[in-house]
Length: 394
Image 1 (cartoon, rainbow, N blue to C red):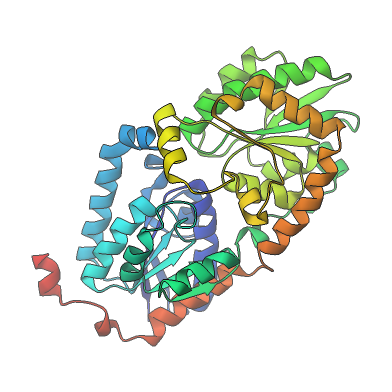
Image 2 (cartoon, rainbow, N blue to C red):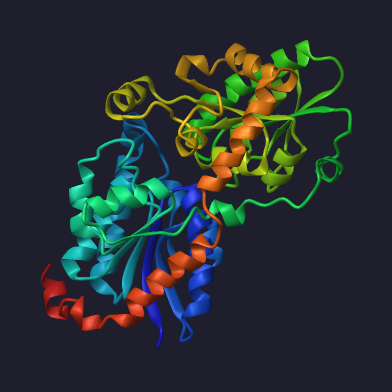
């Protein structure tokens, strides 16, 4: 029998994990799998039909306000879809402020809700735990410490490991990666990853390009800066900085892991890409900027000593972090130069071993798919779904 799932992701990383989950589910659901909802190009290539997540992918209070009409329209569209179509389950991927609204609607309609890659309640707004416990049938977490947080809150939780442990792979050697990208063995190579959202790139590309100029001026020999731009970012956002910079800067689409393997160091926007960089094994500095008001609110609400995921996973500072005004051309350049020529490099690489261990042994997408499959096949549909008449009245 066909199974239908509404799946929602709102960011580049969620799209990556959602696509892997759909692939794993298709192997389990023999009668056919229909996936609707919202996602990016990867999820759509795996068969998802629905909204494009690029329209709603923003971070920060000010940034969200600028996209609010589009965000609210997307929420209304998905709610209508839940009311008008038959779904065996709703699968939500991260993106909590958006997705918890979808969870509330699904719960009201009696549709089981599975949450994959949980809201970061350990970082801020821990009060959401009670709400989540009332909305989510199954929570699938990717960090070991999350399991205990949700179990204590009475949530049915399963630790599946982090999907990046499977997806982040580059079989090329440093030399092979450089040859593939047209780089010389003696070149100094630095990767610049300004983010996957338009706002991130607008705020970070300028300081990164300025840092590239400073680094080029201080190093002897040829220095190349690779920009493995996300598919969600238009060339126009990058071209201005690349043309103006007095440095050898090259955009390399679709070659993120190869670019990181070829690089001596990297400058990475805070987010999932920092974990990917750690797994590849490239020394990095984390940089991030957001609107001043958004940053002030985040500082007041977030209860963490670190902003970067590698440091959160390791439980200590493994990677230097430059936030807001610290993410200046001079600040970024100074950290990169210290990684290229100082002891910081080896210390960081040693810390990466602990990060890899804490991300699990792999198989996250398959474990998550099995949890979803068990829920939609072992439970009677009528135990969870209200009558069509009630749906029409809601």
